[in-house]
Image (cartoon, rainbow, N blue to C red; front, side, top):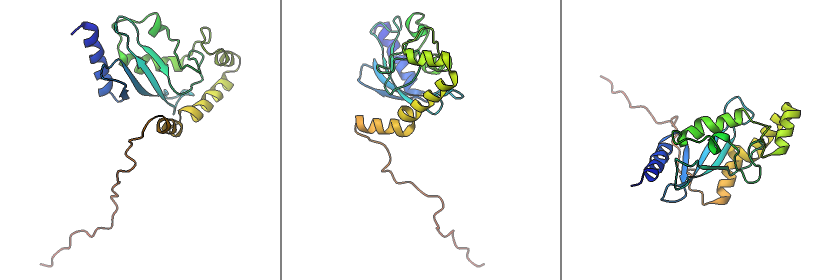
Length: 185
């Protein structure tokens, strides 16, 4: 087995065993989706994005391709295509990084510290520089419309067959079952 192939399998297995919800697109493990939550104490908090990841054949020597599937308002993310302008992923990628780094460090840092001087979304960059408060309001609006649990659940249901557990019965612990009767001694 070649080194890139082994590394792809190792990194994807780490993702599958992590707390992230990962959906593989095919058996070769080079394409998958990750549900990514917006970082706490940012206007993105509460948002859930479906992030598309594609690993090139030469991964980890070449960086993965990352794209947001549901819309996000951010200077460094193209609103329509979802592609990410992220220096660490694009220019400064190193084989020392792995997929966990992207979801635990790089993407949270990108959302927490946008760079309006290198925009993919000019409107978001201009608003952030001109009126940061209005920028935060617009980000939260997008979170509600496109990345809230309801919005993502609805999008998922529309895009694929939903095999969720909503039909599994729940068990109430407060059933009025009589506790065992004590026998008189």
